[in-house]
Length: 105
Image (cartoon, rainbow, N blue to C red; front, side, top):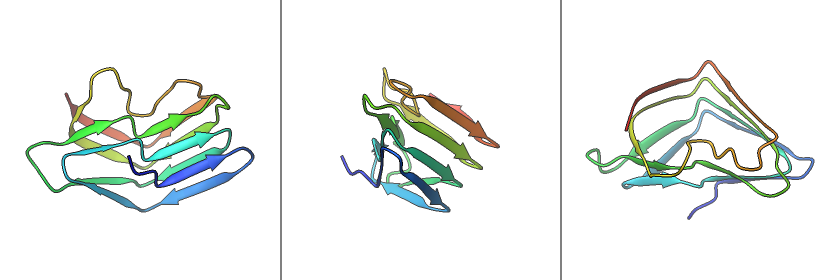
């Protein structure tokens, strides 16, 4: 597991115009520990184009927190069973604005 961003209590982090690249699976790259994370225009790329698995991009600690996802498009991916794209456990708020999610399995 490789954590890209951790939003701790009272912090606000903007993650703008970035790409996360994985071989076959991308997941648990963002942790929210009471803070706020704003993700804008996130792109996911896979080196193995035949197997694109996403496993809960964001996780929330017991402190909860706030997530905003803006202008992000995710398409042609498979979800690992039992996981949501943006982990809702312990979240105070999750806001999706101008996003497109296509062809999920």
